[in-house]
Image (cartoon, rainbow, N blue to C red; front, side):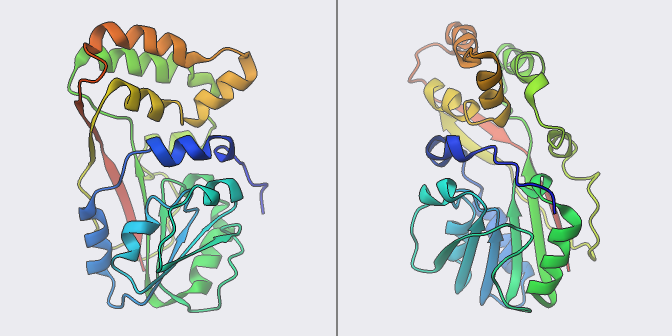
Length: 248
């Protein structure tokens, strides 16, 4: 089992505050594809962005993460039990879960070890769902050019190699399950400039750039976006495309 790469513990509070919220249509699709809705394991839950809406559709949700700091920022819910645990060694009994989910985290896991754990924990023909989202779309060429340059040039050298798996929408990942067609609408938000900057500040490459260079790259990004945004409290529509891999 490879070493846990902790990219987000130092960002846990900002992660919980600024990460966009997944669309309800995604969770409706997961529930509709599951014959039983008793027990769900949300693995690498972070601060529970997926666990909370899933708890509205399943009787019991166990949400685990290797980072205790991330779990500390999670919102309590009567149907969720948060656990600090590696994805590859969950403290769950065999054939416990009707569904296993992984939101924006499959690329960080030791896949052979994790897939073995998924098979152990799932009931026969249980559902496994993983999804990832790409770079935001704003419908404004000037701002998208600035953000693309920031992503590629400014913090590009600090992305972990696993980021490439996100960029390809998980299509290059080994996925040894019988695939199930499951689609999601995009995530959307109407954000102020401060919210957008808060979100970008949670990127793992931003944190690494800051730690390595001693310079906060967000200052340059803010200076470049402010003249394009207009009033800082103006809200702009933003979308993130979601790609889903699901199987039994």
